[in-house]
Length: 136
Image: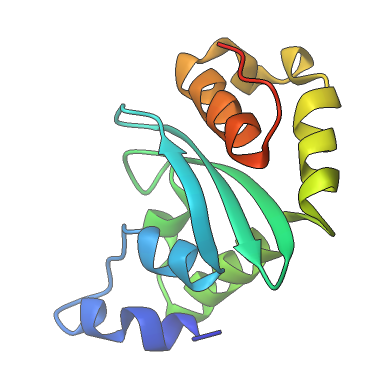
C-alpha cells in the first residue's frame, strides 16, 4: 500500500491542505460499492473486495478543518495516522457468505446511519451484489 506521502505529496507543493479522501480509499483495495452522502458533511460507506475477503468501511467527514479529520491534518504524519486508522477500521469478512450474513443480520436499525436514505441504498446495493435479498 502506498503511504500518505506518496499519495498526497503533489497536493502539498503550494501549502499544506488536503481534503480529498478518495486516493486513500482507493489505496485500501478494490472498491465494489461506495456511497457518499450528498451534502456538505456526512458519511461514506464502502464495500471492498481484496484477496477473496470483503470489507466494510463507514466513516464521517465534514466541511471544514474543525469538523473533518483530513482537513484538520497539518502534517503528512497526521495524514498517515488518519489513513492507518481508517484502514484499521475496515471490518473484514473471510468470505462472501460471511459478508452477506453480516449485512442481512446486523441490527442496522440501531445504528445512526439507518435513518439516511443514502445508507439504505448502500445496504440494498451490497445485499444485492452479495446475492441476498434486495430491500429498500
